[in-house]
Image (cartoon, rainbow, N blue to C red):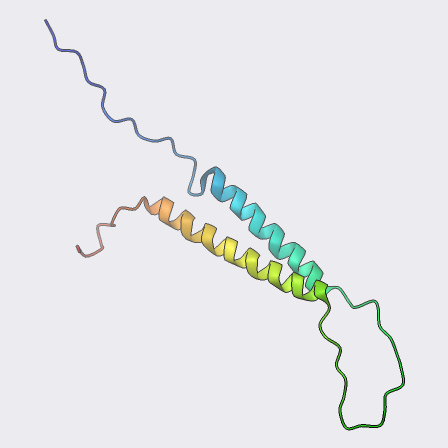
Length: 104
């Protein structure tokens, strides 16, 4: 009688360097950078003019909220893209040391 065969380890299916989650992160990062750049580059279409008293001080209005929101979206998008790039590099490397890496 022959012993039953034991199946060996099944290698995981490869979905590329990024996988589905990385692709979603890549799309989200690109969209955040694009929309944020659009918000930050829009010109201010409102304003006012009024009598300014004679003084040495110059009034500078604050930055519009859409500009600040755009810069925040660009920053968040760049963070997401950086995370996805690092994650893709780590997955491609497989968490294993390369033969040229010194032990330890």
